[in-house]
Length: 216
Image (cartoon, rainbow, N blue to C red; front, side):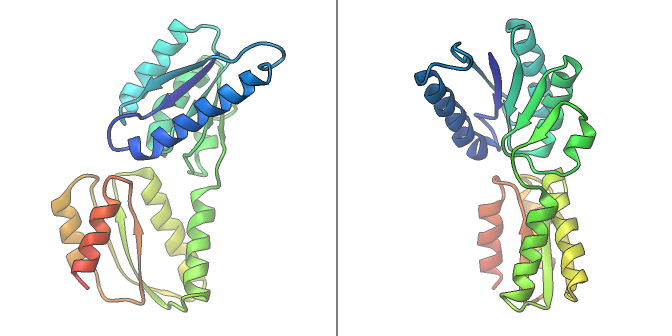
């Protein structure tokens, strides 16, 4: 039995539903080929509702309902993983996050947590290097969500690498997840620069793009 924790509802559902479907497809393919070690794989799927507290409770419940669960997988966000993975680790179960990208996660849940993806430090540095080399950007204004660990990390790693390359950060503005008033104010306070770097979650990214276009 594999425990699958995904946010099928709420702000993270746009990321997690496709990932959950991928996990279900992978299990179906493995079982069509005879399973693992000659045994079928069962995927126990739970909805974390885009809430770390709910994820902690659902992980606890899954351990009780399926004591034979060998490992957990899922989730696409650092805050969400920190709700579930420590519970799994306390029960000595491995947790493989399919989408969370904080390079600090393995140290925060040592021995039991593994990342399938690249780290935020890598993707943010790659964005900074591409902007500097390919776009020839020498100045940047940064807009980021200050209430998500994921976007906090992206902002910091991008700023560090861009300035290392010789670029200048003209403005840094933050907002809170789902708070349209703070997002509008942050966009209004940005200064003109060669580029704008946006670190946003799926809930706010479309609105951020629209507001930036409206402000020219």
